[in-house]
Length: 298
Image (cartoon, rainbow, N blue to C red; front, side, top):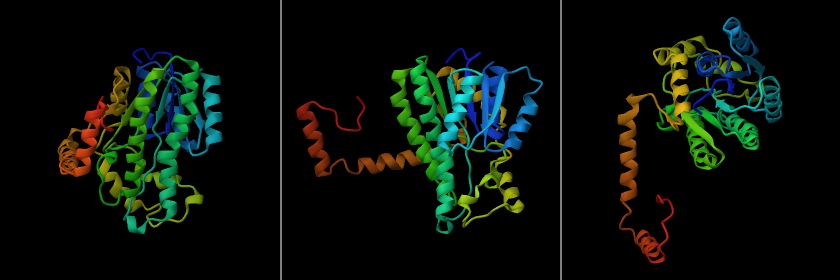
C-alpha cells in the first residue's frame, strides 16, 4: 500500500496509546481517512478534541471489540462515513500481571477475549469486506515482544500475544492471493496508559486474583514503560512498514541476544533427534517418493 492518501483506516483502541499514535500518523502524515474505535467514550472525546483543529478526516465511534454484532455495526458505520476500509489496525489490548497460580478463570477470559478474540473479530469482520471489494488492503496486528519472550507474572498476557503472532503468521500465508498485506507490530516498552487497563475491565470478569485500581501498582508499572517509545514515533514506524509491506515490525534490537539464545535452544532440541529411527524412516520415505517432508521449505 504505497499510496495511502484518501484511503480508509480503522483503528481499534484509537482513543489513546499506541493506537492513537497510529491514528495521528495515518491521518496527519499519510492523509488517510481514519476511524478510531474505543470502548472508552472519554478517551474518544479527548482524541477528537485533539483532531478538531487538524484539518483531517477522523471519525470516532464507541466499540467493545469483544461484541461481534457491535463490530459489524461499527464496520457499517465506517463505510457509511468514509467508504470501504483498506487498512485495519487491530491495536486495542489490555494487560494485567501476576503469578499464574493466583489467576482466576475471569483473569484468563478477560485478556483472551480482548487481546485474541477481539483481534479475530476485527479480521473476520473486515477481511471478507476487503476480499469482496477486490482492491486489496492491509491488516496491522499489534502483539508484543511477549509474543517471543515469556517473563514471570506475564503468563496470561504472553499466551494471548503468542496466539496473536501465530494468527498473524497464518494470515500472512493466506492473504497474499487477495492482495491483502499483513504486518505484526511487537512493541516492548511504549509510554502509554496501558498500565491502567484494569480500569476498563467489565464486571462480568469481576473475580480476579490480581490487583485492581491500585495507584501504587500503576505507578510501578508506569515506571517500567515510561522510558519507551513515544506512540507517535512508533506510529511512524508502522506507517513506513505498511508502505513497504513489511510483515515484522520489531523496533527493539535490545531483544536480539535473548531471541538468539532462544532460537539456538530450539534448533539444538530439533537436532538432538537427527539420529532418531523414526526421523530416519520419514526422511528415507520422503527421498523415495520425491515428496518434501512436512515442515520443510518448498
